Image (cartoon, rainbow, N blue to C red; front, side, top):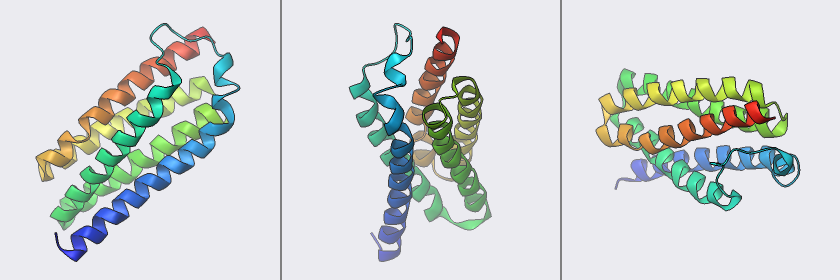
Length: 156
């Protein structure tokens, strides 16, 4: 791997670690308190599931972004703008749901996030099939999270 590619991968990993850390910071104040007190649906996973799933997803998201970036050109730039939008929405959801404890508005954010992930996966797919495919588990998990968000809104 060339030095430029290695540096690019490091940047994408750092961006995703930063998003994860900021989201974790927004989440930390509510997970052990407010969230524990919510009525939850039967399909709510145990708390220990979230950290390993998100760690794996952020790694895949970073590699997908890096692979698209390596393609270069105008189409890659457009795809990376959508990439930035979906990461911003991802982070926003943590602040709205856990930080502000607004379950209903968080459902709107996660719906927009899911649309952005789908658009991002499609754009990445055209550039690099692996980059697009790496976002599929992310889309699946966020779909599940949206269902969970909706159930929590209904129950609370």
